[in-house]
Length: 274
Image (tube, rainbow, N blue to C red):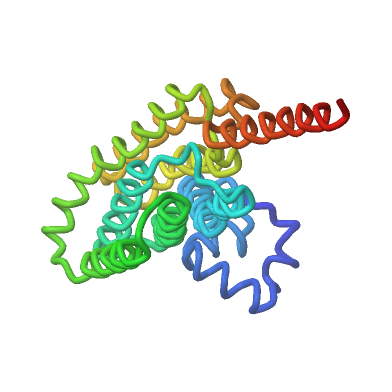
């Protein structure tokens, strides 16, 4: 059922609207949804929604972990962030990125993995930077990580498919150390609420886009469903432990030292007065 009263507008859209819209949703769905104003076409409507969600996730992925990086830099601490969890997550992002690219899927179905992997490399660097580690070891680690990521794109598709299937439990297990760390500390430490809840929303949206645009790729779908479940657990911990454990063990020692120093100063001052 077309909204014919819109035709004077939809038939005369300028090229800077028409061409990008056609590139995103394809000529067939552009003609149906926009040119003919038939917004009730189920197939094209579902496809356009999937494209919009996908592009939103990619754009969100470009900034998703920037607040987390800002929190670490502002607090000069990576307390509460599990290195193993972020390392495994980075490997999973890289494998997923290379696999989807070689399968020829639309960039809107996997593009956020490129941004998330890059941001995770920065977070891993910061975790190591704020913990005792030699600069040489730090540089070698980052270099090895970048070379390993680049090597994935030279791997043949059958190998990538195997790696991707193996990366599903790897990706899911990457969340477990963080969940356990939160549970033991009864705190989410320096975890960014923005990153946690947006990652959860992105996983849920990816379930829809995978079904719509990735041809029902079972492995891809299972990876997003599993990630959504575990992200739900971390989001629940974020709510449960909100405001708890804002001062870490190292902070506590510093505060205690300051407190003891203050008391000592007071006693010395009283002795002098006596």
